[in-house]
Image (cartoon, rainbow, N blue to C red):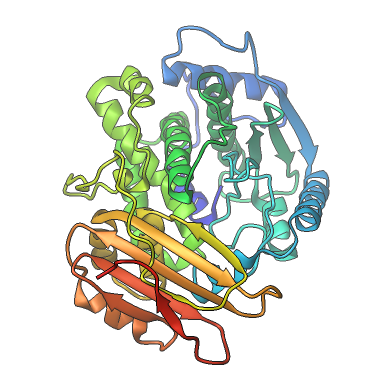
Length: 430
């Protein structure tokens, strides 16, 4: 669970009388204890409207210490670094300011699945896997996670953890991870058929949004248990998004901010379905969920993006690339990542959001020298309308990026070469 989420949760739990009545369905408990795990699990089944228990009892739950979790994170990070070696995309991400550090994959946190099939990190304040400081942060703050490979929920014991509502925070986190265990009986959380980063991130929006939405319903249960006045949790995703947009600088790097935003964006999508038809509408929504992140970018006015969740045409190959380059790679990041990229360079929320909503495709190509000493990146973003002139002005203000705005496109290029590169037109782009 991210810091920003913990802050929001704590604020929701603060207004309490402190006493639970005997008729309450749940009571405060310690998630390291099996009886507590069972009570949370059966309440989650209740909230989801499940007419049967697919596990025939509590799903597999493992409890480890904070030190054991830290050792696991360190071992996973070392193994990933040894297996993957230097990644030429790290430099490309740095040049675009998509990330702040070159990073290796580090599994194990908030129960989501990463693009490589590992667990996605859950701390919005850092780049995933950026080093020992991130491991320290994860080991200290992560309370539980679901591993879709072992089909196990792991609870991390933090006996010295303090806070306004430490036990209740743990209960809410476990509820979220138990939703993942239930999802894994209905969906394949180990999918590997994603063709683009955008497709993966859209799937993340469905999975984490679903878990976040039922986490919100469970949080409302906890609030009522503690004596607070009832609220409408279906409005919370909008409140969380408003807070995140207004405090974007707290979300970490644009790459991580995009991953974080899929939680409330997905929860908003689920809340809309829930208001229309309850739990059944959410289950039916699995069959028609957005397959591109642009499908989640519905603003407070309810206006849906023009592209929506359907297929998009492949945009033209980037118009210009350097003549030299030994290592080549291409990606499609999608609308949400474009939103966070623009915000990271200082574009306002309103302009960045409207531009991301206008996405119809993007193509990012990277070339690097054999020794990875020189990297060049070109990113073409296709839109349904002309981009605002202020975007190119803002992106070029630092002198790092070159930006060309077309009738319905943005072309962004950058390189770390110490010498001017000769760029070559490579397609019939305007």
